[in-house]
Length: 506
Image (tube, rainbow, N blue to C red; front, top):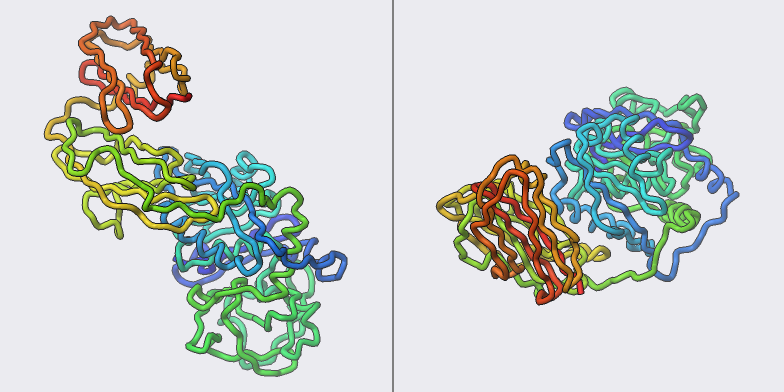
């Protein structure tokens, strides 16, 4: 899907946001805006002085919220997300503006937020926004659109199906975030392109948002007061999705208020031209965005910026070893080495070596291990790979593909009810400190076994065949001989299994 394909303007306060229509698959448009922001009006009136482009790159911290349903299902595929972020940064690179992911990705499991209307979207943002960051929410359905900017919450929501390597939804919405209106501002009052007579003279004004908006003329005589107010954006009367011809223009010419025929170029990101047509902002638009960003005190952060990406050549897959056959079928721990400059890792696991289509598991984590508990069946072969990602430089490649075979027999099941009765503390645990393993109100008696496993799969400590009553158990595990790192504690009570990730600190 494509960015501007569904851009829709949000009626909120005194500024607006974008997105197309809920009927994006048909190309129709439903757009309602309140008007230009008060900030842009003062800027274009000369009350706010333009700020020149910074000689150094300005890094904008983003807090990224990945939203799924109540069951934690439906997040955007991380590869698709990062491909869209690469395009976003490419579009803003010549302004010396780059966006980076601050902190960890934040997950929200809320079906109402994942498929929301504007009121629910504002509630989502109000409850989760992080101060002094550019808050970005990726959801299934942002109010029936591809995305929108909420001025009252100063955050954007993006539809996961409208992001990708060739989709400029994100860049378009950031344009709104940094004050830009649509290039066809005022024509939102018209429902469809088919409702205007392209060969007839355009009106001098349009009644929009309870005011008369000037229609821009080709000669530029009213460019500072008409439409979007930028003199280097040509007249644009096209208020719904449209494609360009081979020369990069709308297929038909239009007629301005002076009866002058003109062609509409399709290159501007703030237009509604299709994504294969748009490519850039104008210099006046860039100046406005730079000035708006400069006025957002405390937002830009250059401290600690790393422009060195993570090198996949430094990645080593550890566990399971390549071609290993595992003794269980309901869970698997994947582990890999830490990579210099990597803040995140994309992990993918599939039934085949083809990772280009539907993938069984694809997620992003800041850890160097992952516990997979869903989608596994016995006597099946799985393939997995990892891609290291830097929070500033998000492009990169996946490393080698490892494979493993699940055991022929299921020996245990991950049991949520048992998991709820188990406490492992402290975690993280300082080396030399005892790790307490406790179970309370187990609900059944039986035989307990547990193992402490290293990240490479080595069993470091094991106790087996402990007889338990239903009231519970209390075990102690010494950590003095353990180097700092990640370990896994696997407990089995009868045929019920629990696995916990343990962090040992220096």
